[in-house]
Structures are given as structure tokens and as C-alpha cells.
Length: 302
Ligand SMILES: Nc1ncnc2c1ncn2[C@@H]1O[C@H](COP(=O)(O)OP(=O)(O)OP(=O)(O)O)[C@@H](O)[C@H]1O
Image (spheres, rainbow, N blue to C red):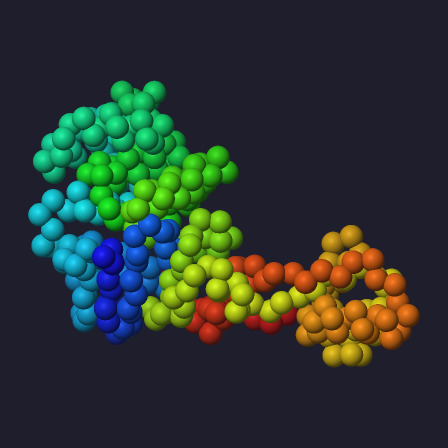
């Protein structure tokens, strides 16, 4: 069954429509990346999914039911929208215990989620003194308390160090491998390329793309070819209609011609190529291409 089903979701704040007729589904067993430039409406959409904001139009269901109708919400969906929202005076253990008791969840889950998030050693320390990375782990531990089938994380790697980022990435992947649906927002495309199986891309509240990660990089983004050749070849490429940029270590990054075209051109001019490598467009390139028209502020052309 579809884990999260968003249909025609619309939210206005004053005159602004910040989420605009948005429809998508989040499937179990995979990480779905929720991407968009700042202000695109990702957090607002996530807040509507878990009933923290009311849509002006449209519906959201989790496993076929509205969040408000879930008997024990934490047992169906865990959401981390703001890692800072932890009672600083409580220990990590007591924070989780209070959550478990008030939600009618078994107390032994506290030890289990502390273990899963690597917080056992600091369980008796006050959360107020935690580093950002530890607070993030504690926030994630709370989402796992009810052993939910659906998990929602808003920018979970923001501000983390490389080790913390890797830990969050591995956890998301393992949660999906257990058959859970994982929706994770980010504006870091490179991160999503390594974490997500599927992508929902939005801009100005509207759906821009709903696609497998592999498909997005295949169909979007300008493809380039890395060429290693004598410098005299650059003007010949330009004359043949290519756009040429300088790459690292005296390489040329060529767009507008295929590798086969470049090979033929080199042969025609008697140029010896020592490398000719088509570059796969990065997810970052694909994303920039997709969202170019939906950015609120565009840098002026140099
Ligand atoms: N409670 C609110 N009242 C008024 N405007 C709001 C409110 N919440 C969000 N907005 C506006 O809605 C738009 C979308 O914000 P949202 O936080 O959902 O975007 P986002 O994609 O999560 O962006 P970011 O990556 O910057 O967090 C923004 O223009 C924001 O200023």
C-alpha cells in the first residue's frame, strides 16, 4: 500500500500560495528525496502531512488514513521536523521515556532506540548539553520510538559533520531496506544522489519532477565530454559549434558535441587525443536545470 499519498495539496499564507496543487506518493521500501530551493514549500508540505498545518485544499493520507485519524500516530509515522525541539533539562533517556509513556508505547523501546542511534553512552546526560549531531540522533531516536512504517525527516543533515552525515545516510538506507517509507527533504542535491532512490522536486510550491534518481540524471542536465588534447584543439572544437571550458589538469570540458563527434573532428584535424570521456551529468546539474525558472532570486549574469 502507498505509504504517503498527497493529492492536490494547496496552502496559502496571505496572498502567497506556498504549496500549489501538489500531488505525489511516497512508496515503502525506498528513500524518497524531497528537493527544492529555499522557500520552495518543503517544510510546509511536511507539516501538512503530519497535521501541523491545515491545507487550504487537497488531502494527505498515511497508509490510507488522515494523520488526525491515526489511533497511535507515533506507531504509524515518525517525523523529525526540528531537531532543536528537545527539552534541554531532561536526559536523553528521560526525554524518550516521557514520549513513550505519553504515547502509550512500550518502555523497552527507549533502550532499543538509544542503541540504534548510538546514544547509549550518553543516555543519562542532559540533552541541553548535546552537540548538534547528538541532538539530531536524539530527534531521530524519538521518531523511531513507535517502530513506524513511515518516517519523515526535514533537512536531517543540516549542520552535521561528515561522520554525522554518513551516519544519517546509512540509517535512512537501512530504514528503507526494512521496508519502511522514508521521506527526506534537502536542498543538497549531491547528498540526495547518494541517499535517495526516488525524487520529488518542487519549486515555488509546484511539482517539477517525480522521478527515479537514475532517470533524472539520465534525462536532464547538459552532458559534457572530458577531452585531453593539445591546447590548439580548443579553437577547432569551438569552430565546430562546441562550448569549451577548461577542466582540471589541462583538460577541456566540451558540451554541444558528442564524444563520437569530437573523435571524428580530432581525426580530421590530425589531433592526437589522450582522453575522451563522456561525463554523466550530476544530479546537481540536473536539479539546477529543472529549477532554473522557479528560483526566487537569480544571480545576475556576470
Ligand atoms: N507560518 C507561516 N506564515 C507565513 N508564511 C510562511 C509560514 N511558513 C512558511 N511560510 C512561507 O512559505 C514559503 C515556503 O516555506 P517552507 O519553509 O515550506 O519552504 P522550504 O522549501 O522548506 O524552504 P527552506 O529550505 O528554506 O526551509 C516561504 O516563502 C515561507 O516564508
